[in-house]
Amino acid sequence: MRRFHDIPADEFPLNRDAYYRLRDEIGSISAGFYDLGTPDGAVVAQKLEQVHQALDHVWETISGIKRCEKKVLEIFGPKALKAFGSFAVS
Image 1 (cartoon, helix red, strand yellow):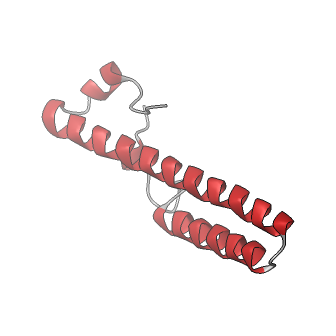
Image 2: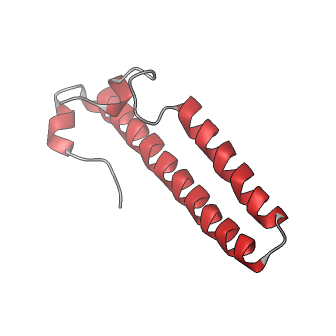
């Protein structure tokens, strides 16, 4: 079983650099829609803020999975990860 913790950052679909880049881009785009000063722009900006928050939750989930995997490895060793299955919390 391949663990998140073992995947090199450059192979991981959402690594730290990608996360911060996306977060910054979404924040900038959202601010741009607010700056339009229109009611529709404000609605779009609010939707983008929801995307921003969702991205943060995704990152927290990934980070939590990595922390759990690391802790299980430290305490029980590599064979124990199969017994634990998924660490994702929905």
